[in-house]
Image (cartoon, rainbow, N blue to C red):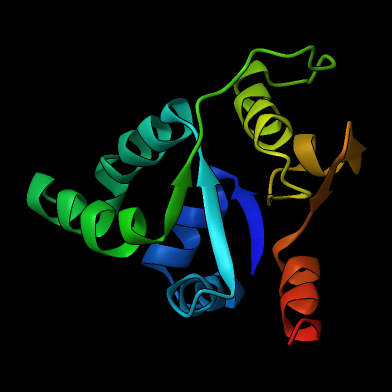
Length: 138
């Protein structure tokens, strides 16, 4: 099983839309992928799901979180480590979570994160690159 931290844009796209990111849902449901999150990341997932543009009720948000995410995540308590400066300070939580958990992959569609390529022991990759990696693993 591959453990990875998924940026919010990837998780929201996977859960709410069709397209390449939606393939990640079957990967985590079939235990080929384990989502690694920290409390700040989970809080952000919930906050973004509540955006008016997604038109989800509180009950629908709770259902998505409880049925589509929580059974498939590994939660880690983050240890504040030195994280190099990032253009968007909100992105630091993803790098910190991945580094704390010893996760090799951070999957993102965010150009600020993708431009880092590699940070500490974490490789920052696109959804497409990560899906290819998942397909290559038996």
